[in-house]
Image 1 (cartoon, rainbow, N blue to C red):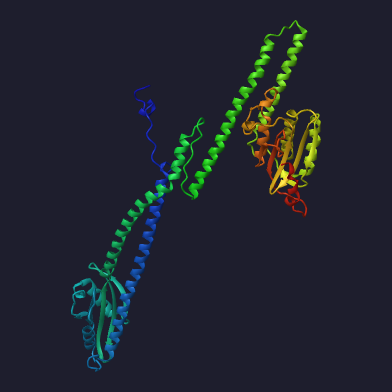
Image 2: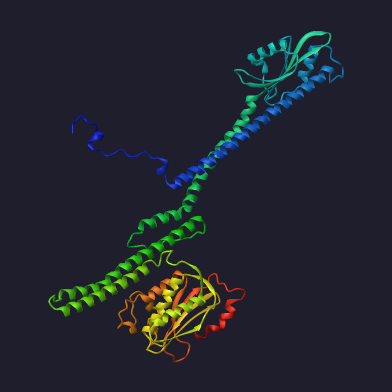
Length: 509
């Protein structure tokens, strides 16, 4: 690289990106929004109040000036002290100035023929209008040009005045007079400004207090989000057991509950995936080993050995095919489209399953109860589960024995059951027989993979139901009773009440 190339081209570290709104934490952004809104509220409230108070101050000054003009009109008619009519402009101005006692920030003067003639005796808080030469010059010009009373605002280098200037004329007196009452508007507004400066200081302190309180309140409100963040960081593919501790019932609490439910679903999904992989590896290894061993020992020159090995390999491949099909059913059992609910005639379904069960083998297949109702369920999946229970009853019952089948409604539940006269299920295995690849004592000599009952349990669970095994109600009876307990959703049977009509059919359950 050439030495004259810029440093940035030599692979130096890039400058850090400037801090933007996207990099600010939610806590800071919420706090900023709260402070800005609070500041705007204080500002708008203060500005509105200041404007209203300013107008009120001007209105108070104008009312005082109007009263001064009314008092002047009285003096023009007669002297309030002697009740004698005044005869000259000079007398009117003198009486009007003497009778007007200036208030706070107020001054009174009178001009005769454009020159200052009288001023009111200043009180402690009164102002001296005669010392402001700019004001006097303005009033002198006004006294020679105006013929009507006027209220106006005049600004000089000294201050700003709000004044009333009234011309005075008397018959038979050619002199021109001007009576002036003025308020120092800047001084009046200064008091108001001092009040609102205090308001501003209090507002700033309030904003600081709001900021401190909001910082802790927002932090407490966002605590579930921080827990969510920390939990998400700790969650890995191998460990999905982390959950968020929920201590509130607000929207953030609902979010935490939702995330916990999502983690539960993910944990079940990953667990099912690992379980499926373990099951496939465990169950497929044996037939593959058997096929490989026989192929390695195969004598190509011996036709009988070839036929035997071929038959054995095909049998093992058929068993692997059935195993894969069963595993696929279990793998899709968690999907929402695993079952497709539709109105189903349970009575007709019972007859169909009974007819199909007769083809399983030499048993006495007996229907002991038949629910003539219509229930919302997946007919194909329920038929698959029911026939699986019947196939198990056939496998584990002696030839010529009886297998009972029935359907009934108890309350708001639909019961589909199978009873056989086999050896039954030991109490120690009643829970484990629904686990994948578990073979009971009576099944260990069979060729099943131990997936039949787990498939039945998965179909029942997809219908929001369960499958249980029970003992026959008669004391000393052999066999087992398998019951599919399903919700009787959308149960329809014309105008009759189905539970009342069928409750008496539960003699074998």
